[in-house]
Image 1 (cartoon, rainbow, N blue to C red):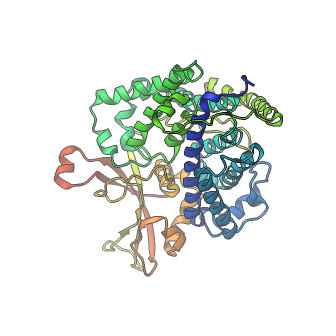
Image 2: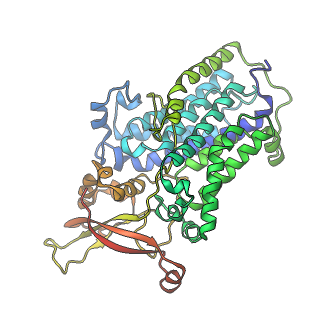
Image 3: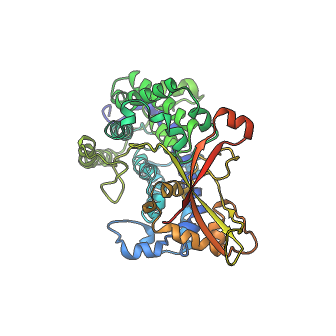
Length: 469
């Protein structure tokens, strides 16, 4: 079936599947390490309260039928182990039906987590992983050529991801149109990384060039994904390179990495054959008839579901990172339609003084990645996702983003809750809980070169006042 099979993409599929398994593994391990404090039975926004008010049809999940911290941990650990098995290629030699089931398992498990994750899982890369993971189910095992329709569906994901992000920028903040957004972005992005200070200190012409290149990559290059080879491979390489640039400049969880993973499917086997010492088998089996029918049915469903994201992209009221169905298929994406010019940070402090006064000593809690200590270099954490640190960035933008979890966070810190404290880098009260905690709002900015040389500090901060959520 020449119309069905894309034999030249055998190695592209292999690269994609291995890389996707890595992303799955990171996602499940992150869930294992963070869920108790965030959404556990005694977490900041407990799952049992959520499923009690949200029905299965709106949030399909295993946890709608049963939830306990032990069960959640079992699901997350199973997902991590399963992802590791896929990474090792243990599903490659299975029959087509068994291979499909092998890739269906991590998708179903992670969808179950996302659907009860509430605000902690409300990021575009969560729905992206669910959408891409579902399409991966239909790519088939190593001895069958990958279906062209599924590859086109993945290119359609990449198109929406890039083109949607480009449109939201043009329609959003004026600084994208006058090419000045990157004067601020590297400093005010959610979690700067070790190179963000250096990117921020690039000359302004370089920032303008970055913004212009972004527009070309997101508004022009996506159309080339549907061009004949080798143009499609060139487009894929451009996406991979530009996403790699974003990886170097900031911590965006696995958004950029997963975008690169999807782009690998558009690069022809010739590129991967030149880079990897792996060749396709001598012959590829014909696909079973039921498999062809299933893939064609999938394509038809995706065409229908594409109506809503296309309508959104064409709308003047375009929204970012929205799903139109409970299975998180064929979503709309976008990032940084507006850019904050000033960085604000919520700093949480505690004291052992039972009656705080003017002479009270307040000690600061340290987070794993978000700015706090001005002398600490921003760390590299991506593609791992620190959910509390990300939400603290939103809380600093507006108190509305801090509801309902921030008051619960302060209460947990007053109790020295071990699960919440485990999410932090530094607890100033390791033995006895504080008598009081408070939150204060600061303005942060990167030091300039002279300040950096004279003080050793990466940040300079100025107190704005008390923070109220």
